[in-house]
Image (cartoon, rainbow, N blue to C red; front, top):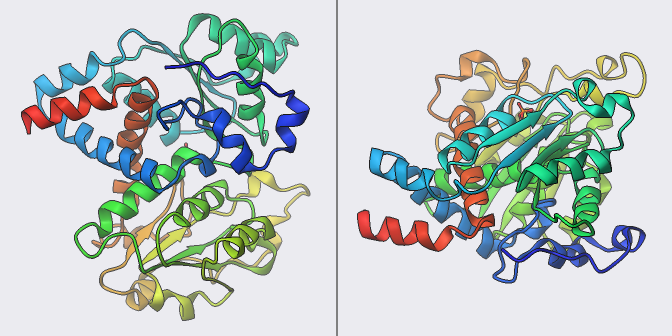
Length: 360
Ligand code: CP
């Protein structure tokens, strides 16, 4: 794995477009060094990752395969630095590390780390890089993972960073598992092309939708329908990307009218943790943006229902037993795609392909 040098100042780096930032994040063979933004994943890389994840999940079914996988990255250690709540992203990354034999350390509460004593984020991350070979970080601050990647690139221990959710902005590995779920769901019925993906809920502040909307632009003829109450409708910056890429999209607040055209319905929770004034979200009428038995009746028999989770009441538990409910499998897919990403980052892709070819 070749280390990445950011030969620009932080101020210059921030002025780059997402496309201009991408080369700084990749290794020479086109795989990620840092994983910071969805925009660094194009179609061929997404397909490579999905193939690797499929092989890993097959290999992991046997004891011999599990032992092979556990030997792959046993010489590396990973730090999980989560200064924002998480269940599935944290645990799926821990599981991914365990599958590959990567020992982990963690800071989940900065009030018991030396940041509480006034240590800067920069010094904290440099400290982690002294002991670990990979940092997986979730933060409430937009762009912090990028900033830390830049800081480390100019230190004596540059190591990769994986963004496990940054502010309202990006959640690239969630978008990877969402794309992987769509690919698997449609692989036997025409693939991920000529589809309509409907996003519903808090689209303004949901970072998973922002990252997935971008990744879907890598697949042909995917229409994106954004269903939200006016104040929570998708941001203009996302729409600008869709316009620039000639992607068909529609904005509406009529969920029932939109459901029948969907091949996938992607529900999201109201993200009231981002409220800037007391009770701001509670004033928005979200009753028409929930999925229950009535909505199931409107959904195509071949469509799927997704959710990044956690949910509140935007999907009724009565929907869970419907075969179209994909969100639990979607969550487990996160473990496999994150295993594939870590394996790829540390240069194990070829060895895993060879093991798969010889044994399956
Ligand atoms: N989807 C997701 O990011 O879940 P967690 O917040 O539980 O990690």
